[in-house]
Each structure stands twice: as C-alpha cells, then as structure tokens.
Image (tube, rainbow, N blue to C red; front, top):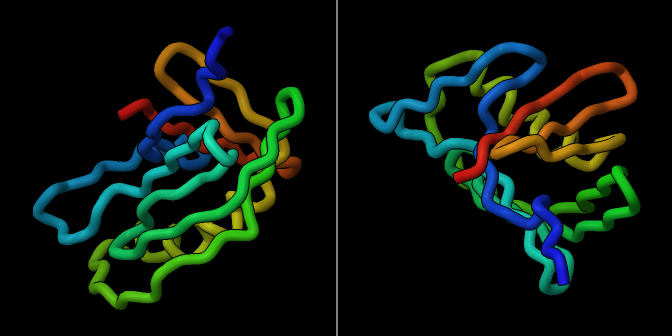
Length: 120
C-alpha cells in the first residue's frame, strides 16, 4: 500500500512568490499544516493559535475545513505576517488543487495564487 505524500507535516515557506522568513526570536511560531490519513484531518499552528479541521481529497483537489482555532492574542510586529494570519485559515478552505514535488507541497487557488509549504 502506497502512502499519499500529502500526509505529512508542512511549514509555510512561500506565499504568492514571496519567501517567508520565520525567526525564532520573533515570538510567533511558523504557520504549519499537518495532514493525517487517520480520520482525514488537518491541524497546525498559525501565529500563536492552534487550529484543526476536516480534509477531503479527490484526485488533485484538496478541501480543508471548516476549521476551528484557538483565539489567543499575540503581538505580531511584522505587518506581512499579521496580514497573513488573518487570511490563512480562510484561504485553506478555498484551495483548488495541490501537488507534492520532492519535499514541497504546493497549494493553488482559482485566482492564480500559489502557496508553497516545505516538509518539516
């Protein structure tokens, strides 16, 4: 039985061709996406909050959500990361397709946006 490479632990590394730099001293955790075959679930970290949701996979289409998250407040100095936190979970619920290439997960949307996650 072959395991789907999608089921892995992923860290967001690029949004719309812009590389993200996660600094341990910044006080926020990298945004993560952990997909598990057991129960077809997703969970992860977004800034200082944890989230989880259901997953449905059909061919190259991926559906995540609806998702729930904790609502901790944390100070995010970087405006780019603050903006991304606000749209991360909503965007995951609207993914059109995905593909895994080497150690990278690429999510794509109908509007042409493309996010890249690196295997952790």
